[in-house]
Image (cartoon, rainbow, N blue to C red; front, side, top):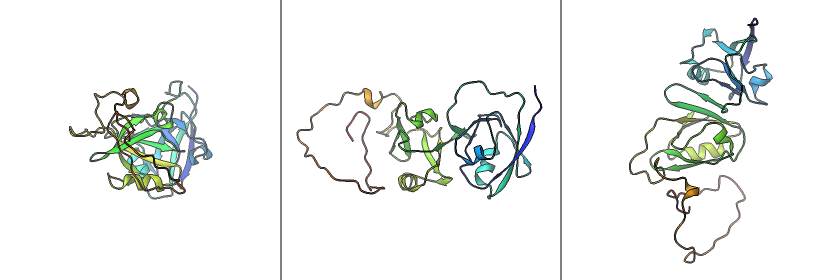
Length: 224
């Protein structure tokens, strides 16, 4: 294996734009155009210190996200990499069932509905959400580090400027009375809709600004 060099970078804004592989301190992906790339961080570098303290795989993310800006990172780069070839989801996996992703553009490709919490009920194939590893059942817990709930998530998400960091709780169980999410149900697009639209009157309007101020909801297999 080749020698590893020390890279010192200053984090002055977040999101910083790097994905560290779960259970390790190794950079698996660096997002194009983000501060990490501009600072010289690259795939295969290993996070070593955060502001002078030794980085640990189980706690680095919590320290990184809540540290007062600016602060210094020390990474070890070069030499052999433990990463395998191939593309991985653009996300940061934390301990305690939390999963963070960076939204660089919209549409992100996920459908969130609220029963008691903002839960992902559908991830659209081919969209960034799918590539980032977002799954049906995840509960949105934070937007850019701010905790959100059933009442606040939509406004926080819509008003945030790109890029946006979303943190999901991957372990929150769905209640039995949740009509929007059923792990045993077929995907929405696989359900044949019954009924007719003959009894409804068409209504058209122009959307000139966002947020528009309405929430669309539907049970799985039903029209919104």
